[in-house]
Amino acid sequence: MKKMQCSVISWLCVLAVAILLMAGTVKGGGDWEPPAGSVSHDDSYDDSYDDDVPAGSIVDDDGGDWKGADDYTGSSNVYHGSRRSYIEDDDDDDYYSSTGSSRRGGTNSKSNSALFGIGLFLLSFVVLWWNEFEYVTGQQVLGAIKSQATTVDASEILGANNNKLVHVTGRVEGRSHRDGKFNVKSGPKALKLERLVEMYQWSERREVVKSEERAGRGKKRVIEQEKFHYTKIWSSRVIDSDNFKDQRKKNPPSIKMGESKTWEAPTFALGGYSLSPALKSSIGGAKSEISQKVYKYGGDPKPSNDERKIGDTRVTHNVVEAREVSMLALQKPGRILDKYIEPSTKRNVTVIKNGTVSLEDILGSKQSSQRNFALFMRLAGFAMMWMGLSWTWQPLVDMVDFIPIVGSLVGFARDVGTGIAAFVLSLITIMLAWFYYRPLVAGTVIAACVAVMYHKQLSSMISGSGHEK
Image 1 (tube, rainbow, N blue to C red):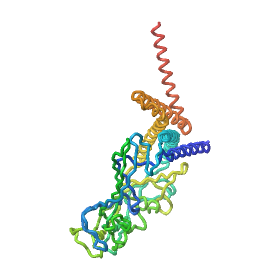
Image 2: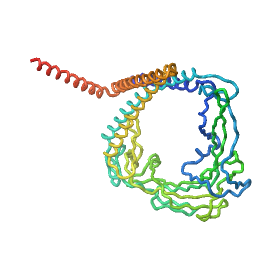
Image 3: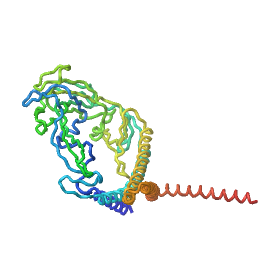
Image 4: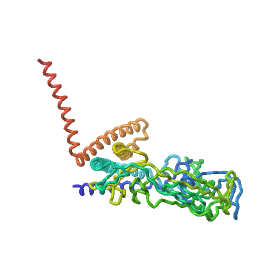
């Protein structure tokens, strides 16, 4: 049965995705263009950083420039690029002509909407069914944790707990680390020492600004203007300025003060335990800065209050200190803590929390998060089904939309009808999933509902016969 169910879900999912892809590839008379007056971004200018500012970078529009070849000292940080224009029809947003030819795509656009709606409608069934499967599996995992987990003392390790799930609380400790190049040292039991090397550089962001003007006979001319914005940022990667539109902006070809580097203790100790490599990589925590210095491009130290210039290098040292943690993990022979894979569900149930957290609190937190996620996905599945049905019937609304009152009434009836249908179908899907995955729970709930209804009916019959007497 499970193989057949997985096959049905897989084919339903493939069908839904195929319909969605068909909806995405149907063109409504030429390529789509953003609405006039909108701003679009093109990330093709440089793939060495995201959206102009890498994570953790500091943006600064002030400061001097790198004193190298083709140095630029102008005040403008906006470069105006090429312009192009094309004609759009004011009366139909689906009418485009960027090459001189004209095609109308109203019918295709409506078909596109209906196809997308059908795909979304089918996909909602997959989401609702999968959500119930995930919730049941999560409850099974929680039950296994409750029956198997044992709270142990990190300083007294018993061989009887080998290959068992244990809950342990203690301080994770490493060792001292030293960066000899900059003579920086961490504390005696630090987990990690990090050297972050960044250079002050130009970055470029391309922007396309659209404006429009009347072109006569109910049409409008859309004008695209390219703009390239330049800012100065600290970045740990060299930003290639050779492809900048404004070639007056130049970055140095390399970072002179070396590379970023991380030192990590070979083993992390928690009381008498050692953490496996898999658990080591899962130990996070806030980094604290212990040193920061700025150097000129040539390598000479630079005063902290001196003006920043392109090519300056900033070297920051951060440390991850020893910390108190609570975890659910597998105790292995050799006093090692490792990831725990629950045998019946094959799920990783390892939990690591900062601070002292009891086993009951860990289980309560997991149960609450599972319940909230299941509720969210049920609402999401219902919303997907409602939107899918609504878009499927959109062509009918478009047919009468030119009649003001009739169009509004049909649209309102469509929204109410599809909402009720989506609600009922969502409940049926969830109920069927319950019968498949939780037959006892589903049967108990239905029996209770029938008993309540029968009890009310019996009570009303008894009270009615009493009045007759």
